[in-house]
Image (cartoon, rainbow, N blue to C red):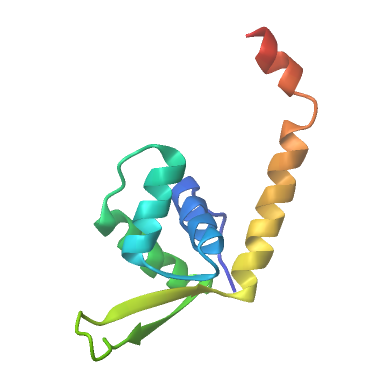
Length: 108
């Protein structure tokens, strides 16, 4: 079970995995985050977040060995049902907080 609220970066990492189809490895996640946020993202920071999310029970991982064409082993991360519930809850909370404030931003 997940403990504590998601940090912004953790939230972004989970959303990147969700966008990639529920299962991804670190390089794919970095590229998705960079494309979506317009910011450079350190692979090491993503990997640390992935391990932290796995410890919280929001991700599961498995190492996949390379095929005959070579390459190297990759650790793929998969969202757990708890991660989906956490994302649904945070989405609902954010939508509720955003409700009715758009006009205030337009005036700024």
